[in-house]
Length: 308
Image (tube, rainbow, N blue to C red):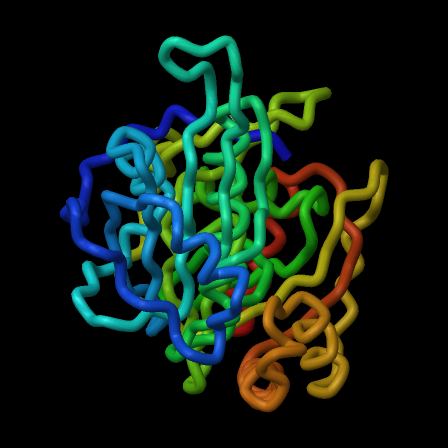
């Protein structure tokens, strides 16, 4: 999915100059990463988010400033010596006094994850890979691919893959007065509390895969600042002409449905299963197809009112 990359935001992390970035943790270190280290990386910043420690380095200060705008605002500066992941970004283009045009490159540790002539592809790649890395390295929560809002202090979690209609439904719930947590990831702690993962909504242009990043305030909504207990999980997808017929899932069915959308279930199976079992025990989990998002949003808010 293509993103509109114009997301100016106040910088939160001091960019360090002419000092090495924090070292990569030993279990992630490889000979290929040693080879990448032979390049010059004069600038970097580092942050911690949900217990995951990340460094981002580049030869370009301007590129680092752009990448900072994709870091969730809940992240905090990190000044430790070891990190879980290092992103290395190289700005491409025509070099001075040369006819050669180089690629924009993004590495996650030693692995190249973006190689493109287009600068925006590097930014989009970082926006895609950062939450995946956070999900696998997080010490303070489990990442579920889901949209999240809260209503009267109870979180509504809408799991689902890309293009399942999550953002459209979350957008309508926000317009109806729900508090916005995220349109992409639910970060759930062992106590069954879901934490905000604040970033703009990625709203697609009709008939196109391109998406615009829209701050929730532009929709008349408000960003959540504190965690909330999960009260309702809605497993739903848009289907033209579908009728709203919610089916209550058992605790086991609910846990399996959540696990199917849990990002790091293979790398952290025990933590993922315990957290999802806790959610399915404390919250109501339902499955249904839905029609238009605005109509479904009203039904969802009435449903959680009954649950509360």
